[in-house]
Every structure is written in structure tokens, then in C-alpha cells.
Length: 109
Image (tube, rainbow, N blue to C red):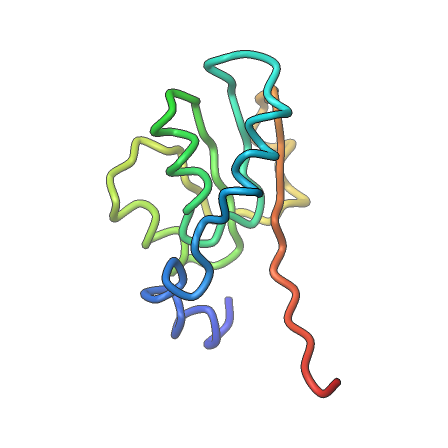
């Protein structure tokens, strides 16, 4: 997708570690355990991995192939796909919860 994401893919989890507050926010929204969850714009899958380790079924999508490959390399059992969030209907699946934590970087202020 972009050279920027290709370059930081190996270090993404160190730069942007899973935040307990965000993880707890997801957990508070879950209707049942285990739940079927979709992580949109998952990057290297930090949150998806945490949720999968708690017994949830995860599908994770991101536009960047390198980010998805980093997630797949961790052998997590997560259904990780290179996909545009606008195309999630093509998954032909329903989810108990869908979340997206989009990174916003502002410079020049």
C-alpha cells in the first residue's frame, strides 16, 4: 500500500503497543464469550491477537499486505486478509462486534 507502512511493519507493535484502555473498551462491548469479531484496519493485529488469546474468533483486515503478513507470520489462527474496509460485505459473514482503531498522525501544529 505505502512505503511508510512497509517500513514500519516490523516495528509497528513497538511503536503502537496494545493499550489496556482500548482493549477493555472492546471487551466491555462484547455480547458473549466467545464472540466473532472483525478488526478493521488491523495493522499487525495487536488487538486481534489479544482477543484471540481470550478465546474469541477473529477476522482481521487491512489494506497493507506487509502488515497482514506480519500478523500471519505469528501463526495466531486469525483469519487475516488484505482487504479494503469498504469490501467487508464480501466476507459474507456476520459479526458480534466490529471495531477500528485508526491511527491519526498530525504534524505541523
